[in-house]
Length: 138
Picture 1 (cartoon, rainbow, N blue to C red):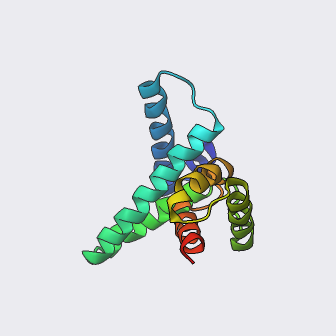
Picture 2 (tube, helix red, strand yellow):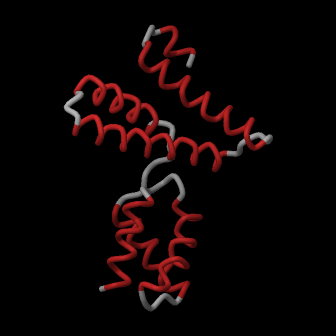
Picture 3 (cartoon, rainbow, N blue to C red):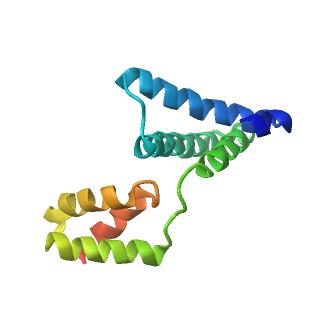
């Protein structure tokens, strides 16, 4: 935050303040200090909101708002752990399928529960869900 202030990057500073406000709000709501995993979940939620906003703004042809949201998305992504590659995600899915003994689509909940704890913040869980569904139905 201080670096953004010193560099007079108002857009970056605004995005960082949004992150800090969201974290503080969750701490107040839950009456506890957030750990690393909780902070990652707050940032992931904010990223999901930005992606939804971008889609809506693009459909409304509001390029000015799309650019602002994309910039915030870029700043938010910088605060997540290093993302896993597609092959690493596939390996994690294979391991979770073997561990849970999943045989069909009805077992998707078990597999996703295992993967969510392992991949939180390191992979887009929406994409992971689609891959698991594809593997279980195929």
